[in-house]
Image (cartoon, rainbow, N blue to C red; front, side, top):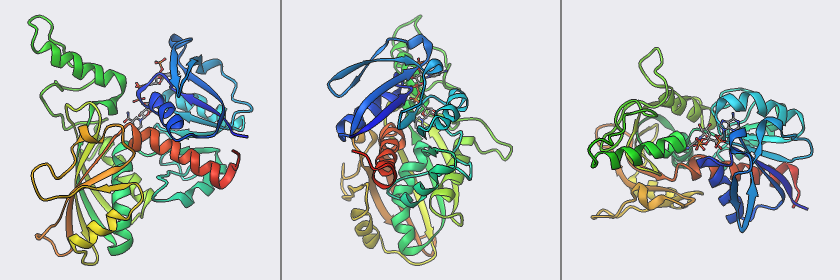
Length: 340
Ligand SMILES: NC(=O)c1ccc[n+]([C@@H]2O[C@H](COP(=O)([O-])OP(=O)(O)OC[C@H]3O[C@@H](n4cnc5c(N)ncnc54)[C@H](OP(=O)(O)O)[C@@H]3O)[C@@H](O)[C@H]2O)c1
């Protein structure tokens, strides 16, 4: 006996990837429902070798369904996730709505799987922000060895992190640069994204940081350890898929770069590619479609007592969203629901 699964936002970037990953990882599915907005009613999406027709989230009855993987943004999530949860269906949510709720576990299965026990308080589990997910996979094993005091991170985030519209804008604007009269004005992004970088993701906050930067701070504390200080600068770059991060870490104890490399090689979800030669590191185009978080450029930071630098790359639609959500579903299945 397997699970009755609902994918909410099945026509979107993350929803489609969740369907791919559920099929790839042979998640024990008895029945699958795919939902989106009313305008997508009847739209076909693929699940393994099956084609499914999209239903309307607004009229769907979640009773009798085991797990709903939500990827629709905070607005519709606020309206429909509590309804699904009240109907007895466990919600795994990709939006930021519940991430900071003390009654909702925020989980990266390689890092804090034990937090799953708290799911029953609201029947909702939160998936972290894409930039946080890949970073904490790298930080946790190093924290366990040498206690992290402070992290300084700069991100290079792909346009797929802004959904289908973000990808379309980069594509159309890039083509438009070469065709007089077909220039595309910024709409999804704040400034031109083609051949440019934009140090602004999500809204500005009172202290001058952006909400995206604040998310990395708050989520790292909730997932690993509230004593870790994080300062972030989040930047959108003209890459379709794959987020990159330059991470500087200050530890309580000394951690040698070779030992850090060995620790990361043994860590779940991490792939170390770190040859000190041309091409001996991973770039975002190489991580697309992969499950791993790739770590390169591991080196001592000689300007502080106990410091390391590293480069971290992952497929934001996978580890940053869909894969992590499916891993949470696997964890829930194995530890709690125990079907299949
Ligand atoms: N992309 C990432 O890297 C990433 C990472 C972490 C978390 N997330 C989060 O995941 C969620 C989805 O992101 P995405 O990149 O997949 O966005 P997307 O490509 O724009 O897709 C949005 C999906 O939500 C559906 N939707 C929107 N409004 C709806 C409504 N009122 N009722 C029902 N369905 C509705 C859309 O259906 P229609 O096609 O019918 O409009 C579509 O299926 C967001 O909360 C995002 O913040 C994304």
